[in-house]
Amino acid sequence: MSKRLLVVDDEPNLLRAVAACLRGEGYEVTTARSGKEALVRLAQTVPDLIVSDIRMPGMDGYQLAHQIRASSRTALVPIVFLTAKDETADRIEGFRSGVDAYLVKPFEPDELVAVIASILKRVERTHAEIARLVGAEQVEGSQHGVVHDEDLTEAEERIAAAVARGLSNKEIAVEFDISVRTVENHVSNILAKKGFNNRVEIARHVMEREQSS
Image 1: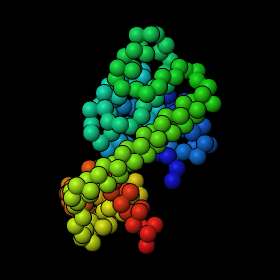
Image 2 (image 1 turned 135 degrees about the horizontal axis):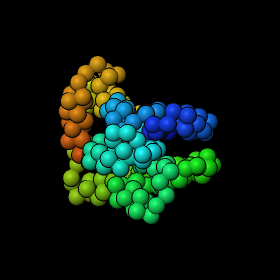
Image 3 (image 1 turned 120 degrees about the horizontal axis):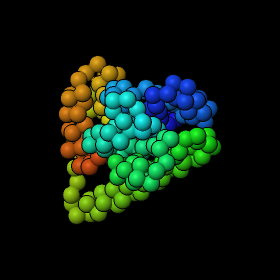
Image 4 (image 1 turned 60 degrees about the horizontal axis):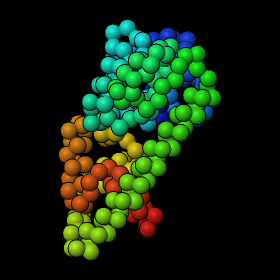
């Protein structure tokens, strides 16, 4: 599955150029012309990484980054600032707002692609390590008799499969024509029944079961 990127910039020509560059690398790219529009896009789906300008009318890149980090739904999404602001103070403020990388315009497309690929690989390694540690904890818990393995309902099975496909709660709600709150309740029930701690464990459970069947 190709990685999903959100590119935010109020300059239409640059926005098209960056989007075309990243699509050429096989990424699925969504664009936004402002910070507010970016928040609308984020409400619809959570991308794997965000590339954003800083100087934008209304909500600037710093404010956007703060809002992204303040939401538990998007707090861990990597952010790359692509901007004409090259002062040390600007960089410091960017990193304090939670960005992962800072590239200065005019940018080199190859550098942007390399930075994004590096960040996404780091995220994948982190997720793999978390999954490994969680698996070890589950083994240890089972050795001490701490086991939760209740059967899931048919609805919960469908939700679990959607989580394993990488869909957000909102995307699942749209696909099954139910409310986001209902999806959240199903996910909570799955976690409780199986003794899982997060969505990664749900996804691993589904994939392991499919491989064994």
